[in-house]
Length: 266
Image 1 (cartoon, rainbow, N blue to C red):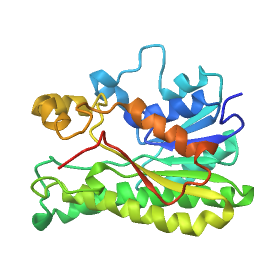
Image 2: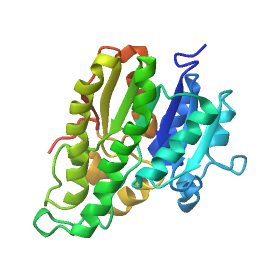
Image 3: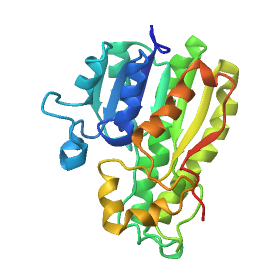
Image 4: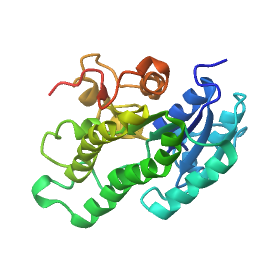
């Protein structure tokens, strides 16, 4: 019996990268895992994200671990699609005990969107993807958690939501990720009486199959030199924190943000 045997988890944005590592870790702990992503085969677009010809998607990887899994393609920025996707997962796996609201992302180059010159169209897109998508996911699972009198919600912010870039660029992404930190605090107070914990994870420079290409182009040392540990993080480093936040180890932890940054200093 794993720590999460008998539990149902949903991870959004789990087709590849950090989200995939979250989904696999929850499955290893015994949870049945629902996967939501805009493209369940998005790993095919990145050479270092490929999962092997044996599997069609992370859903197949999860099932091989001896638990149930069900995947749905949906745009996290569209509330109707999120609700429909979660309804389908509940229909196949049961009411949700754990939500990792991981889906999100930025747009445009890192050197763009300086705070005083923010592209408002890109801001709206990223706001819907990051903050709105998180809210839509939470609203869809909370009624079932309240009925159970139990729930673990993990939101996903970023180092960009904790501090600015050197020149104040990529601000459209950073402000939406900062908003998730605030939302997490409010949500924890709201849901605490129902025995539902809400915490955020803030990854730093994580060497996913997609991001490692960017780090290598710009010089890995430019990122590792900013950390106390002098290395990039791994998806597994982040999954370790997800394990803590979704098991009984964190039963008295709520409304907080855990930095998984290797001790970034500026």
